[in-house]
Length: 307
Image 1: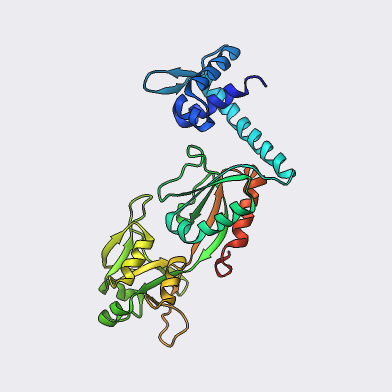
Image 2: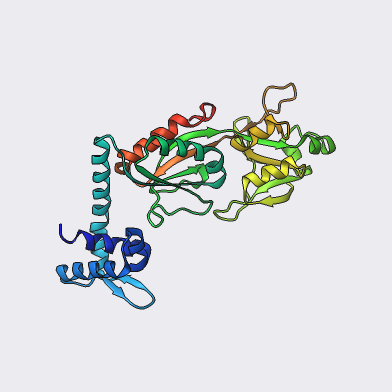
């Protein structure tokens, strides 16, 4: 197909918002991309892009053509990847996006092992707490917890991680140990501000099968889980932290878990776990190297957190 370069240049220009940005994604010059698109337009006998010095817009013909050919470029990439994998050599690029805390503490060593296992793949791990756009940022797989799921993505649960409510021994010695979530309003609570939308993340429990949100005295707020754990260990108050961060500090004696089942004074409440999902754009994309990655993640998540 003699106009494949033109189609690729056109699709990337639309996705990236400019011919120059699309060219960078393809690893070619802006001039080459512009020439590819011009030749494509000449072959089609119509203008696809309305170019100005400041913006790039699709013509009516361009909108129709983009809707038709976008999936073609994706299918060709999938087909090429699968042919390599049939030869036993998965190749190409894989971009994985994940929240910073889970990526840093859990995913990074697993991705490193995956890259060692498949050295012909070019793997990129993007740690980001902002909204991730699979198309615009060319993300093949994103790891999201339940509250981040969105329509249009296929989601496979890969981990169920306990949440720990904990504080330092020094804080508890000074302020007492709360025996029920209703007491949290009288304690100093370290609360996460969700980077995605800026809201404060509530602390949810379940009692007698009914879910409820505890009333908090949010004396300290931060947008990073690792930092909240450090501040809790320093004696600033009580924090809600994922087990992948908290358990190490608990084992070191720097944090003490609260509201845990098993003791004489164990509260009649349940702490809801945090589910993590591997998300991708369509089921067909889960073939080949992406399927290898997802299966690898599932197999290497710590056994106690496997879904």
